[in-house]
Length: 412
Ligand SMILES: NC(=O)c1ccc[n+]([C@@H]2O[C@H](COP(=O)([O-])OP(=O)(O)OC[C@H]3O[C@@H](n4cnc5c(N)ncnc54)[C@H](OP(=O)(O)O)[C@@H]3O)[C@@H](O)[C@H]2O)c1
Image (cartoon, rainbow, N blue to C red; front, top):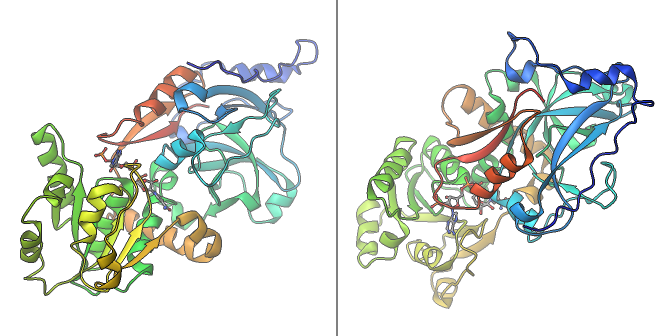
């Protein structure tokens, strides 16, 4: 375990500490009839917020470099607002960012009161506005609004943050209705990625097929459901499980949300897969015209081999850490079009379309037509120890999980 380099937040001396800050030691709250995200802890008359953040000062493996850092946030003025986080997922990109291998780098800063610059981990999440300056109010924000992060690199694994209106997107009241904090906190990356990849590379007709790997991931499950809704059929590739009962259960689970065919990566690479594909696709009369790849390596090549001529193959992840290898014949004779997709770049170029996509997914969620990805809720209370949170982050580095880790904030 590497040494933790983060300095503690500067403490106010007892002489200089305003009396009202005492209440930040948060006495046990009495039973509240409010939902967790509506519960408030005591805030000083000076408006200082005490905050905790999972942060790192150098790149490396998350358990080695992450540390829980405490600091305080001054009362907001002007265009500033103070946010209290409600839910923040642990996505593969967050891990890659901490490892230093993600293209979007976080901001390392001493603004949180450390001697050395630190960056707060996490890119996605939903937060509520608990205080704001006049200019922020003039920009249409108000207390209790829910906001999502506009771009990656914000640092969402924290109880509170200071932000400007430029950094966030408000979830309008009607979009919020009937939506849980986990649903709001996980809507902006995975479902949007699946949505755009199914729509923006080729126009699939009803009854046509797409094929994807990582089918049980958040993106994969979103693609299955959106695809089914738009009339597309899907071949879904998962990694096989040693426990065959668990494998069968996972296949059934994906069929229950709309998958037409579910195969393991070993089945995909077995002899006879082409004949099986012909059977699924009505003797090849229903072409597989789109592939979505977040794995690479041999399973991705095998997937490409099932595509019809002129099809599109979109790579958006690299879970196996293997390169993508493509026979030249696929380019020359089958004219398969290979693309990459990064939702952050797409969102930066299409901010209005991003809002519409989020609104569409939330509508489908509200009306029960889009199910959340299974989640492993990690409760983050004010007292929760850093080691507990970091252990949960470490767990997500192992594959074959039953649910995505999501920090759900309680009384912070
Ligand atoms: N380009 C973009 O804009 C964009 C946006 C969102 C997500 N992504 C990418 O999409 C992928 C899925 O993200 P997510 O948040 O949806 O994932 P997730 O819900 O956290 O699930 C992780 C997925 O990765 C699989 N996996 C883990 N280790 C693997 C390995 N060594 N080889 C093959 N598969 C492995 C898991 O399969 P098992 O259950 O078998 O472990 C599971 O299907 C990631 O690569 C992520 O970076 C890209």
